[in-house]
Image (cartoon, rainbow, N blue to C red):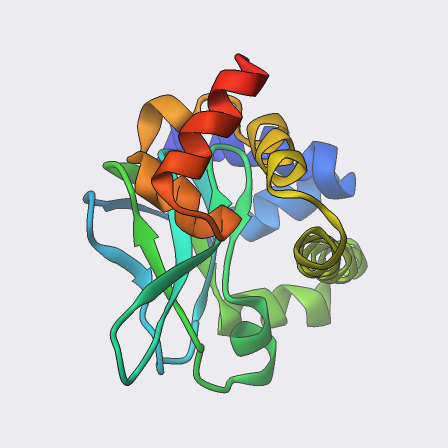
Length: 195
């Protein structure tokens, strides 16, 4: 786990300015996990119990319509991003969507119970919690604004900015689903952008 702890330490130091002591006290709670391509970090209709940091790989967050089983991609998370169904995690209510590995993935994660314990005993970890909430609020609002105000092409450019190699890592139909378009439209956008 030492390799993972170094990655985690670097990320936590940058993200929330946690001290060496904060990180050392938290290390016992963080565990590593490998998730195979196609397996799940969290399932629809289940409470999300873990907060993860993606060390390797890419995940999709998608909704599966209960009547049609049609899938709609909502978010992607890749290396050096936290992954969680945040509303489910903090409210302890069931998640409305799936979080699935698109590649063989590696994460480090902490349980809800252990993170709450750190919040109670370490003021800097409580600050981490506030920053985490702000981050996921920003993700959520940015996604809503993209869907309301941005063209498909603008959404595609933002996706590439966030995940530069995504088009080489996952099938195009997943990107089309995220953008709310069909594959031929994605092909036309890619030709115009040529990034």
